[in-house]
Image (tube, rainbow, N blue to C red; front, side, top):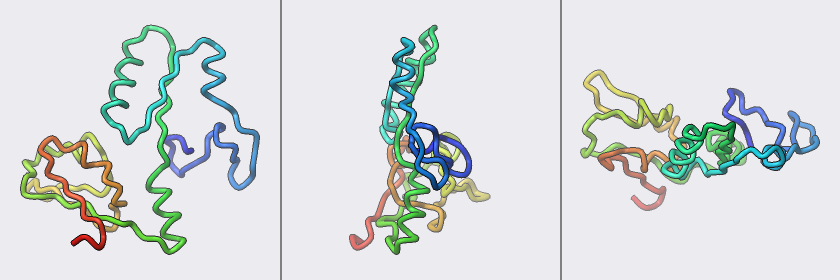
Length: 149
């Protein structure tokens, strides 16, 4: 695991300190031992993540949301070094009505808006995991698995 930090640093719960193995700190167990409510969610289940954060914000007491999922950018970079390339590519279809949710709210760096407002996907930045598909309100994103064309 990495924490949402630049540079893909390992956090104390990983048991890694740069390139060295270190003692793993069980963050969830520590929080629970102090009576802290802990919600653990996969970040790729966006509706559940949104609900967990909303519940957390509504709770008056200190609480923790652990959002877990391997960093796909880091994962795909590691795969590319091994000679394994992304299996798919995301494209924007004619259903796009330029709400720009993919850019403004989802924030994937592969999306950009043209001068005319049209949305495009930079193939060099798209990791092809399809996590963006559940964000588009008009279902204008499509994923093509390599070999399916």
